[in-house]
Image 1 (cartoon, helix red, strand yellow):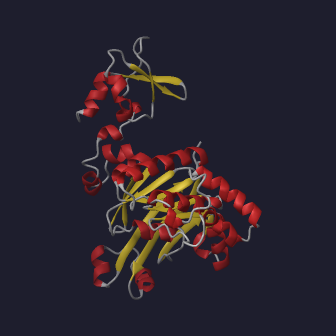
Image 2 (cartoon, rainbow, N blue to C red):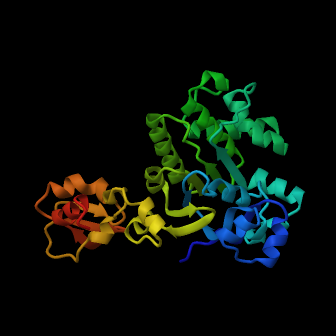
Image 3 (tube, rainbow, N blue to C red):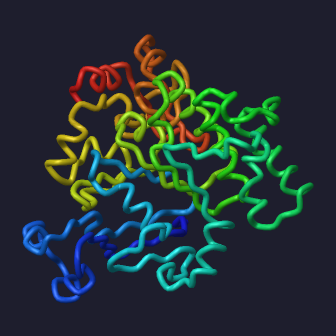
Length: 337
């Protein structure tokens, strides 16, 4: 069954400069040279992308590629110059200011690189703040805030102020606050980039743990490809406001659509993205050293498979679909596949 689309962007543009709207009315598909000649900056250019319910959709690119602007267009924090954005089947761009406020308060959660915690409020009060804005009574909002504070691992620190927390703990408060209103879609703009590598890894682990519990629809921005392939169901690679390719991490590495994507992914370890299903063989015999999941990446299963003379059975939904051998794993590790 096809997973429903929750957010649908069609031919979305965001141009900066004088008379950008008028320019697009007469130039529906301008080139980079056309934009430069008109003294316009194409922050987002002809973007078509569909976000599916329950997936982690990562948008990545170098600084200035347009990824943050695109996410702000998706939530109408920035007004698009042209195009169509449909959220849960409704035209987001035609929503009134009051409708938009309600959508953002109740259906969209946002976490940015800057934690933006309110320094005079405690952890619990910061987490409850979105519900306070909605007019939810104190008892109800504090009970919900307590739930999300515990969910992000901050039980026992409810009475702390932001200045009394580490950077990773502050980021957890920001995540708790964005979850308090139980959003349908969750936008995260480089939420871990200000953290040191160890804490960043811990926050990625925490993020994946939360997603396994909550199954949110998530749009996640990063410039770190290792972070992207660890978190994403699908990745969109952007360059100069244009989406170069949308694909799974594995397909981006193995089947890059453009030279830019190929160069962007050239140094990625294939063992981190190639799945057992992609290198398995038909079952031959009935002696196996163990089982592995069809969607497990080679890096995760390399040690036991490489250490055994017998193949491992590959399972999908508990049923055998193939086998994977030591040779197949070694071929991936040394770059022969």
